[in-house]
Image 1 (cartoon, rainbow, N blue to C red):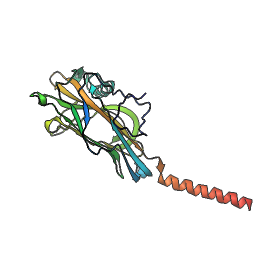
Image 2 (cartoon, helix red, strand yellow):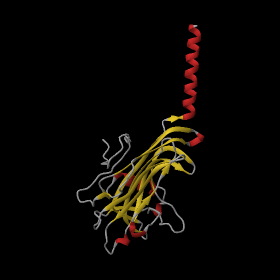
Image 3 (cartoon, rainbow, N blue to C red):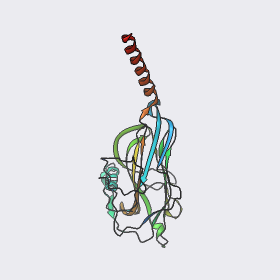
Image 4 (cartoon, rainbow, N blue to C red):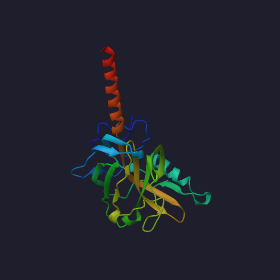
Length: 254
């Protein structure tokens, strides 16, 4: 059984067999939906996939976890381990469970599935309502389980990774690279048609860069899944073949 406890999940969002580990905790801070008009399902009539293929009825389905995640989350651990495996022997990091956050709650004030001609995905924005003096000590870290790459653009076998980048103005790995005011979280991941999926576990954390220790506390889980079941070019070919076969059957009868 999928352990996700979703808010108004779309009926077709099944993701059966994927290694999800979005488990709540009795002492976890609350997750509240404050977006007045969230969308969990978006569709475009036609879209372009990899290799210049075109599809019809291109659908993006999105969902998020109703309970906050805790630092022992197995999916985040696998993302962290996959990232850490790429570090040299003298540059390995440790992952620690920091337990509960000091207070506040998570408010999901924007959540929308996205479906566009060239890609699909989801927009999410989360506020942490805590007002303590130590709020600036926390930063987001995001683990991913997905099946696509952006450069080069490709659908691949599913894999774990950390959402990290390097560059001017970005937080260094293993932290989520983009830092927003008041520690809000924002992301707008998008993947290629016809079948990209993206499962994220985003945690508030503290980092000890000198000793290479990432301590994670609580977080949010969300995902999107794309479906474009009908390649329009193949559909036309199939219709053409069907008509040809029907004509031949009629010709034989005549």
